Amino acid sequence: MTKFLIRMFVIYFFMLPFSSWAAGEDTLAKYNSFDTVSGLLENNQYKKQLQALLGADFSTFYNNFDVIAAPHETTGKGLFVEGWLQDLRLENASAMVIQPDGKLYTAWVVPGNEKIEYRTNDSQSKGIQSDLLAWSKRFTNLTFNEKTYPAGFIDKEPKTRHLDTAKFNVKVTLQCNVDNKVCDRAVYEGTRKSDGAKLILKGKVIRATCDEVICPINSYEFKNKNTTYMLETVSPALVVIVNNKMVLNEKGSWSDN
Image 1 (tube, rainbow, N blue to C red):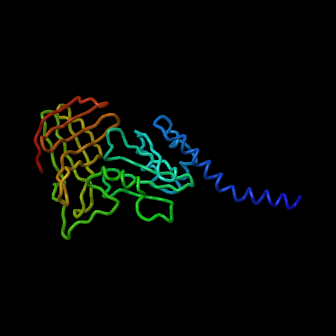
Image 2 (image 1 turned 90 degrees about the horizontal axis):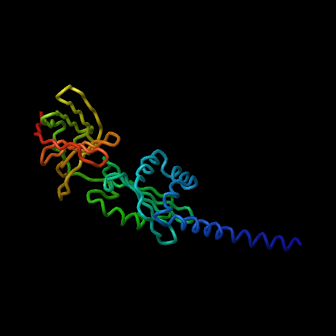
Image 3 (image 1 turned 30 degrees about the vertical axis):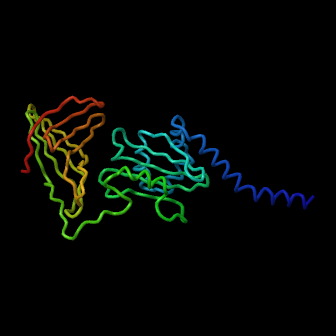
């Protein structure tokens, strides 16, 4: 009887890792569709694993899953999941790969970042996980490496600009503390001429794609709940979009004083 119990214990012990792995594989498989993938992000087990890995960066990473794309299976029966903020696929985006054995690989971008952030709990991993590396190719001006600038580099964009239109005066100020890095954050201070009403918002700088160390500013974007304020630089204008519908496009002129 004792030998039988020992034999059963040994069989159970050696089968346990495989059973756990198979259960993880089956669990991930049920999320491998556009209709079910959101359930993965709501699964407390996976959320706790992500929180343990990302710490203070968890909310930044997790909040980008406003729009969730169709997932796909990765090598090793893992699952690739990506998401982004509505209309900001190239500005606020996150992606991750989850393996059945619990290994996690995560990456994300937010405005103002000078590189794609990457975290993994796989201590044996060398280099960026392949699915996340492929995902990163869509970001033309960002890589997983810190940007480098030549000695003496200075961002020559004016720190403060004013856009004057028929009905509004808007002051835009770059919100960075140093000159030797590209600044992609800004503050909007708008004044309505008819009654002096003011609006202050924080937002981002949108730069053109170019082959230079720093690219020129194409526009500024600021959000206030369901309203987006766009300041165009090439064809100077204040554009206001409410619930994805343009309600104002007022031409103006820029000055740097």
